[in-house]
Length: 158
Image 1 (cartoon, rainbow, N blue to C red):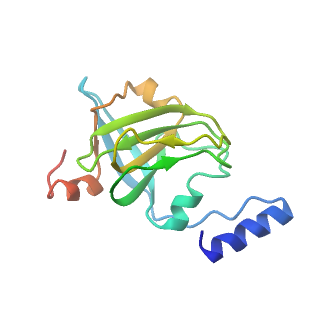
Image 2 (image 1 turned 135 degrees about the vertical axis):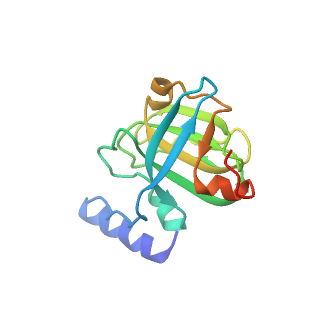
Image 3 (image 1 turned 180 degrees about the horizontal axis):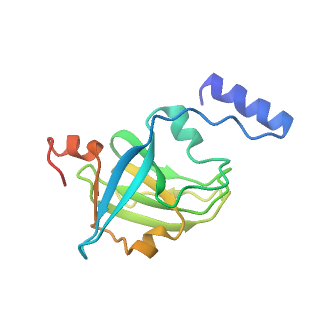
């Protein structure tokens, strides 16, 4: 944890307040195409720095219906997530470098310290409102379209 982040967390702990939200980049468009032929559009915040990934969606009381956060780990690796200080249930979509969904953790429990691991090495994780994956009929093998994955595919859309 960076020293800046530690200071914010300590201030929050001693004052009983939630840490200030770290500034994320402007929302980016992301689309998911299902094997059934449907597509869904999302407006996602990017988490690319260590501080942004540590903060994630902590302390938020709501998330827009088509909102989310895309965690870019910068390389393919096995990842572990948790819901510490996250107040709303989320679905976590584990995404390979080619944009293919390799795992889905549905309706994760708010504020849980249980570790939610990727089923295989992934490039990214998309967090969306809990229940959205079920509502939209998302499954393993569906494709996420975002510039992050086009780069991983040599500029081609998945």
